[in-house]
Length: 487
Ligand code: ADP
Ligand code: F6P
Image (cartoon, rainbow, N blue to C red; front, side, top):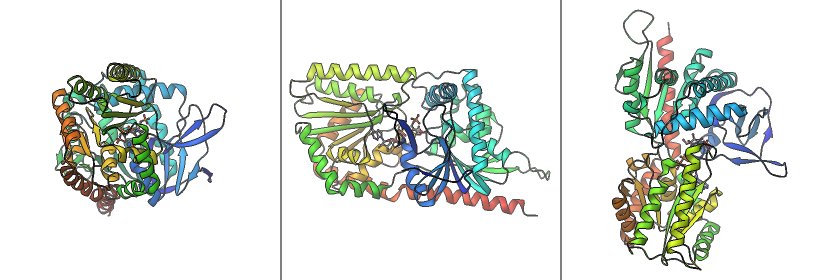
């Protein structure tokens, strides 16, 4: 529940992201409630700040609403308002119709519109100003994701005393793609305003350093980018920026405890019964996004039914797709396509009492997600490109029974760590069909072996480790700066 706090709010640790961890929802009857925001960023950061406490600067998810700061647990939230035009041009436009598709290998063509960009710059400035106001002298400010790439440099200019960190939750593309961006130099200069820049995968960090070399002319030495010229004329850089991979994760113990609870286990049995006790359940869990490869998954599933490899009476595919960015055209097309395909599969292969695909277009509470993970024999993650994919890690964390098989796209960051998944290339429909088939037929002993190995990785590399690795690097950067600035 939300509590009032004094205004202005200040902290020695400030988190900045486009969305606050909670969204303000106005119900049809006019009442207001707060709901956990969608996406992996919040799943990962919520347990981190729950322990550390912070001021979190972000958008409350409503339009044209100036809200006072408020508190949720140990977090104090500082809302940044967006107007209808900001929402259309900064959020839907530049963030989700330019950067999102460009950084996900142009799966959908990015739009380059100068008015979107101008609005992106203006809104980034608003976030930078709010963060500057919330930061105590010498504070650490941690800026997140592709919506706020200009904030680090803007913040450095406003507040040179701050230690600034930036984490990109999505992939950073190869320069052949990144080079399309009309504002590529400004974006890179924005990000290298930070002292530490974190990425999901080794390749993302390498792509970034090479883009900075190419378009800003700043060389790197290992993971360190050498920015500017030292004022003493020594020929050295003005400062270093660490640009390195820090693969994000989840609170594995929390998911495991949830899954082990009696009520979640009961719910998992209930789910299977409600589905008509099929022999096998395949599960997909995604925001309804074209990067997630839901169409490829449905295509492979329908061909397996067509080929007679899967008996529709025995196998059910449950696809949970939470609504996302619903006014962006590419998302509307995707939704239409998926819903037509689901209808076609159920029309062709269903019976009066049974549909092979159960499609749910909504978000669920975490307990229900854990029950779904427990109820599923196979989790299918078929992203065409994904920074990490926390759903894959959540599945492994929940399977304390060491059962279940994970089909995982090589194009998701999670594939770097979860090597014992059934790894697939989702563009190769025959390969995907073979992967799903192998997962469905996987003997129990092999499931156990693979799941045990994957759980070990997810528990070892959990979100506490991610944040402490990242923040230790940030502290290191701060200490180096103090040394460098000492007379
Ligand atoms: P992204 O950040 O692109 O959305 P991730 O897989 O990294 O992808 O994170 C998604 C997060 O949102 C996970 O924590 C997952 O459990 C949650 N999630 C996704 N779909 C749903 C849904 N339909 N209902 C509830 N939670 C969902
Ligand atoms: O990187 C994950 C992420 O893209 C976040 O940046 C974002 O907030 C979330 O998923 C959900 O998307 P949106 O905020 O557009 O609903």
